[in-house]
Length: 194
Image (cartoon, rainbow, N blue to C red; front, side):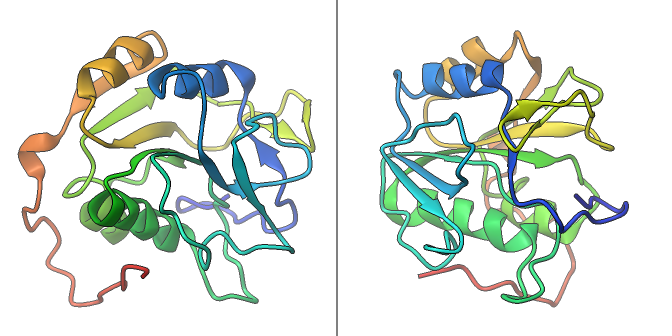
């Protein structure tokens, strides 16, 4: 995990806690079409799951209606990717395919990738009340909390449903007034995936 702190690149199996899996499924009408960041211990149980080392979720298609993403927070040195590439792909899937996408990510509002792909492309953010969200590590609740605040980011058109479900888990903010505004004066462009 990063977000300006020490990066943990040793574990690729940090799973979403069950209360958030249930919440995401509730927003999506009971099921998830794609989990591009799955692992052998995942409890998400999406219809389609991309799992390393068999499939690289950043290279595969995201042409699915309902997508849940709990991306790696660290740096993938082999593929030279970071969380910014996952956020770019979330925004792309929504813009290109009309997919509803929810991503569980560290709060990093001061970063260029949040400014480019969250604030100007997403519809809403739920800043989770859990101050140290406890991820499942290799499928088990080991009691360790994340070293940073986390949020659920929503790219989609059903804000009311997202709000109704996630208001019990955190502070939900509608950011649609920021669509396509230029927040960052950053000349580095992270290409959207095709």
